[in-house]
Amino acid sequence: MPSYKAKAIILKSYKLGESDKIIKMYSDEGDVISAVAKGARKVRSRFSGRLELFNLVEMELARGRNLDVISQAEILKSFKNIASDFYKFVFCEIISKIILKTQIPGGDLSPLLFKLIYVCFNEINDTEPEDISSLKKIMCFFGIKFLKITGFTPLLGNCSKCNKKSGNLYSFTVEKIYFSVRHGGILCEKCADSLPGRETLSASDYRFLYDLFNLKIEDFRDMEVNSATLKKVYKLVEDYILYHTECDINSFNYLKKIGV
Image (tube, rainbow, N blue to C red; front, side, top):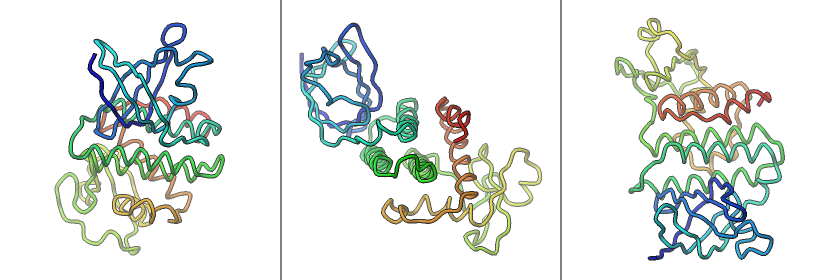
């Protein structure tokens, strides 16, 4: 069987038979790789500890008829703090499910998506234990950058229904800004009056949403966000991803059930 090498982040794994494990990964070339690690669940497996969820690994694989076969694997980066923290694990699981369910094909933007996954996992790993606000902030960052990379960017300067230019909404003098998940962006007052289900954003909400699209993680990391704005934008990003990617993520509902 022909073989190949790949650098990838492990997003999902599950049992196969008595001792094997199926691994789903996103590679730095933008491929979702499904492969079997034979004997990975044995006590003395050569893969011991290497194929854990969210690890960044370098592998050698042989192409198979249905599943590729992992012959070698080396850890490049292990996010050890994620597995020991329930909330960190769930947020990483959400990111993983979005990537796997949307199945973005490889292309020029694939390295950006791979880097985004890595950066967000690293940030989550380094977050203080049970710091829900920081985790939601990172999730907002991931969601917005994911939408930007995959071409689902909402309109923030023009009305998403009539395309009317909206002026300087970044100013704190603006009291209310209307947003439609369905139409994909902000609304002018006239269009907002005729549309049910619109969201009303404060100037602070809009500024945070706008900054998410433009700031790098280094600048975003120390950015202060009040709890009301974080709650509003987190929900908006969640709804936007679910609506425009048709990606049903049950982990979002689970977090709501436990009050997160």
